[in-house]
Image (cartoon, rainbow, N blue to C red):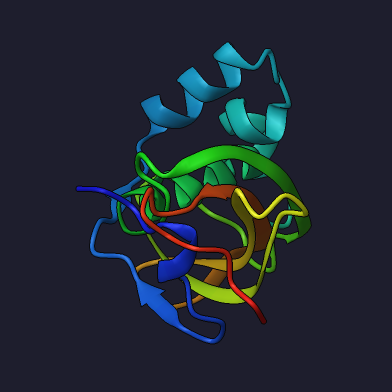
Length: 155
């Protein structure tokens, strides 16, 4: 599936993404290993048992990365030039092994580049667990391709 071109993004639109994923212990372990994040709260059952959470937490960067991945098919698949920034990241609730994560994207802003060749799109992403609880929120700003046959916008 091809993602959205700059012209296809409409400020205020919200996209509920169809894909979701259940996070396993192995997913969390591999992500921590690949990123060399050996935080015992993510990896050590005995350590985590003595925390306020009572069990290991999924690495927050994995949760955020998964949320981005879930949004790709309906937003930027094949139409992105680059991710420019991730801002205002928050993790309002913890994520545990076995949680199923889904995502929604809201288009917050957009503007053409100064040369009119591409566009910058700012999107708010929310990741929720199987209960609908928001577990991660952030703003993702991308540099998007314009349709090959498009003219520069005048607004």
